[in-house]
Picture 1: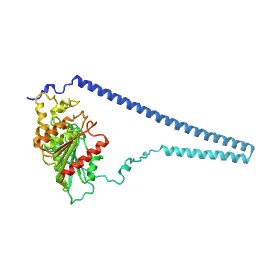
Picture 2: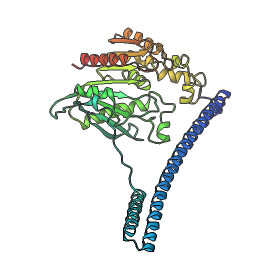
Picture 3: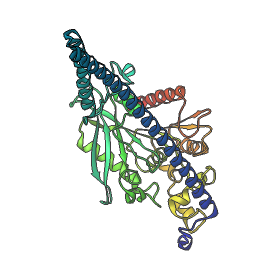
Picture 4: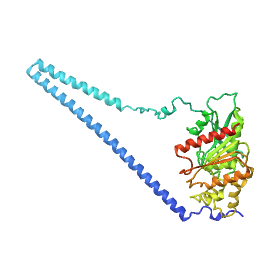
Length: 391
């Protein structure tokens, strides 16, 4: 049975309330911006007023000096007193020099000029003596020939062309997010160990237009997952130093969901680390604190039409019997976005299948890992997991 199209696009009262709340916050943000702009303008006007007052005072003193010199000159000429004439001329000449200097200063500061920009280097102490791995962009054509997909390859440090290096696929969340050449701490840690990292801006990512962002609509764990696999294939073909036999995959949130999904679709990965991922689209919809997410991504509620069957078909849990990749699951115990039950049921399912599986629960953490001690712990565990399975 097809989904009920007559109800598509209708706004509920909750939608309208949400829109009103967003508009209210937007208005507050606009007013806040205007307020700060007014304060800045007032400060600028005050500075201009102070400058004018200072100039006026300076000019007044010069004029007074000229007047004094002129009076002394008049007295000297009247009395034919050479001493007074010389004194008056010295006073006038001195103030003429002040006029010249003042005018030249004003002309100098009135010229159009580029502001002096000093680049900050706040991370210099932390990065002192450390190298930053190069991030190389490239593009490839999607599996259905519809899109040009952009990806970023972080190369290992001390790369030798005759050596082989592991590749870890780091999948971004969202799905409406993106990755790029910006500094990525974890990728740089991997690069320092001699591991390459691939980031793929699969369809659904932002930054490439609305049509590209909408391309994941109704197709979760579908063609966007194929974009990731095609990105891996493109990277392997173009970089012969990458080791086909040492591939890993990981990601957070939607990246965790795709990591869950991909290990049921391919055995190319030797290790997987899904973090805060969805393994069961059906159970997720009824546990998350924003249960209208699936309606927004598929167009109808799960109970409408055949969406319940579609969501189950696109859930990694349904296909777990095909999984063979050793998997390290990580999840925050207080995750309200993607409840920890998503990792718990996938952990049990993978163990039932016989897949080597470990689950790490982080106390106090919500969606993702935030506490420094937990970040360090998670990276250490990721490294150990890859080292164990990259043999």
